[in-house]
Image 1 (cartoon, rainbow, N blue to C red):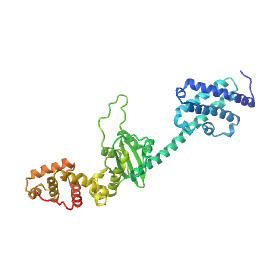
Image 2: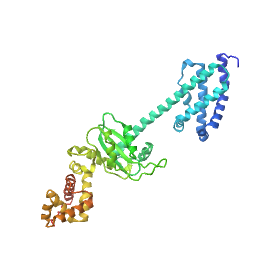
Image 3: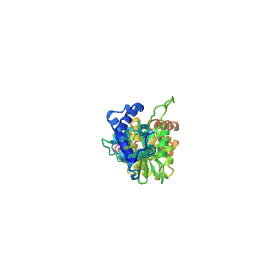
Image 4: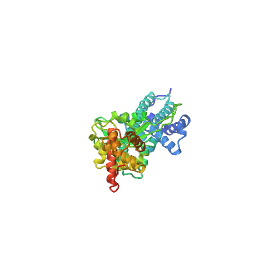
Length: 398
């Protein structure tokens, strides 16, 4: 048993050992922690500075325990900022454990007060490390939220710059391929985590933005790698099905889904359609929730949406005109006659089955079914807008 020392003698002894303890700690780190040996020299040096700062800070704290210095600033203040991003909390706690073990081994058999001080100090520094990482995570979370809001605003406005792809990558976007934008009313209590969990469950990723009373979700399909022998995904979930699953996360009111676009950087087109549809959705009395923006084309066109007018002309009027003026004429007569097969057949001097066949061909060409009440409204709006755009080419009866 070593003779008892005064506090001054113990302090002098500890100070004389600080260099030796730091060297022994670095050797123990290299021998016991593989991740430390794999680090580049610059980061190994930074970790060594943290370990040495911890030993020095302990000696200061042992000298004046009542001063209670901010341990995190003493120990981690000298480390470069990127060290927190490259060394995890688990690794930091391993570093603390090794340092404490080295100090304990060296002071074994000395004054019992030193060992008690080491135990107390190691507890404090562990909590301090956790606090440092918690603050860093909180700051990163706030930064991510601001960055996500900026990206969503850029998508909604359509004002992109060269930094948009890097901002998207910084957010950890996992979407690949097609994207669609969902617009609805923001709830009183927005549960962002629930929306993200639901999206992940459906192999999708979301960017979330709140603009006043509106909640905007940019949805992208993700294709995770199969894990633990699970079979790979065989089919993609429709965006409408994803939107339906996300619907509980929105507030009351209408919910509108924009059309698919090939990539995230083209999402502004889907966003414009969804926003335009959301603005007029109340005019469709029995609109489902969610509603496709393309199902609101007539209302959007009446409200002055140029994209809706162009969509109706380019996806309905022009394809029919290019395919067959006979189909175009039959569709117009059918709609003008209140969707009556017999009345249309009489006007065109054909059999009702011929009208039925031609309407089926219309559906095959453009994808809309003229026999449905809602779709007939969309088709009639397309015919009107198409004829206005071509005043010199009136339709003639056949």
